[in-house]
Amino acid sequence: MPTKSLSTAPDNVQGSVLGGLLGGSNASTGDLDLRTMWTVKDLLSKKYIHTEKLDNEKMAYGAVKGMVDALDDPFTEFMDPKETIDFNESLNSELEGIGAELTVRNAMLVVVSTVKDSPAQKAGLLPDDIVAKIDGKEVENMSLYDAISKIRGEKGTSVTLSILRKGKKDPFDMKIARDKITVESVTSKEIQPGIWQVAINEFSDDTKVEFNKIIDDIKLKKPKGIVLDLRFNGGGYLEGSVDILSAFIRGQQDVVAVEYRDSKENEKLKTTGTPQFPDLPLVVLINKGTASASEIVTAAIQDFKRGLIMGETSFGKGTVQEVDPLPDGSSLRFTIARWNSPTGRNINEIGITPDREVLPQDGDQDKGYDRQLDEAVKYLKNL
Image 1 (tube, rainbow, N blue to C red):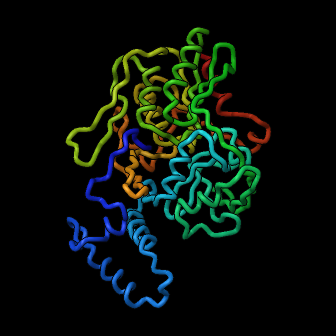
Image 2 (image 1 turned 120 degrees about the vertical axis):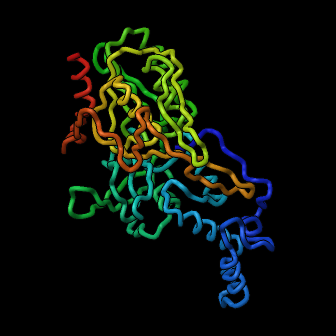
Image 3 (image 1 turned 90 degrees about the vertical axis):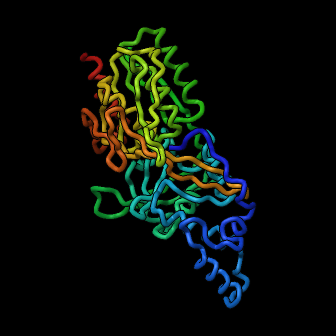
């Protein structure tokens, strides 16, 4: 989950990563001793037989990547200039690919969530699926960036993923046709008279405006209940979660506490105190693809007993990241904090257990039947 503000690299970081991180006469920085790294570089420069492979920039980026990868944090990564451009483009609401968010967990490429109505979702790719191969090539030694780069591609082309899924003995192949992926941050639909489904698909820059517009429109129609659908929402900006909670929770309440490394007290974020629906019956739908900022919303609703949480246990991402650009065009995305729910829960690698578990059944997707949404509507109608 990134923060909105991006910090700037220190002035003494040179334009070249090689010059800035590895260069200079002083080989040690704080507790980090870089003399071994410099010795290895000197030996390679003087004696390595394949001189055509001695690319200083490539070696420098490789060294930085190795240092960051040693942290063994799937949400912390160094991105070279090209990877940074690709990452920034991926934040746009429109791109070409299959529409799946991926992460690395226990050295395995794991599906976090799929974009609503994307090729990945239509093909049946599920949260927690493990991608073992991409077009027949093992992903075990691939970086997350390399794997995503191989899965993305032009509209009309296809990619074949070899999938390992819990409950299935053998891996199976899934061929997915790439397409243009457009993500609408917030959508709504009246699914029964007076009962509205409001789906938040991501927490982007546009979420607050889109959500408030939809909520204002629903309010004019005197709703009887809302299903807040956070399934397959992989997160986004932390601040967006507080905007959503402000629509449902009465008063100015602490809804998330952010714990930074050097702060003596948590930073507590409050709702606005002007909710549009402080008492309207509410069901929040979650599944394994509900992560990060969407889990902040879920945890607060559950802690305040403001609505019923229904569906499946969520992903479990209780940390906060920021992206710092570096002068040479590269960047560092890294974990800067952890967050806790209003009652002090941290759900990292645990997830949020729903108040009422409703699991999809085999054949539901083929029939176009949304069992979880149907159960949410039944609950609201029976209140």
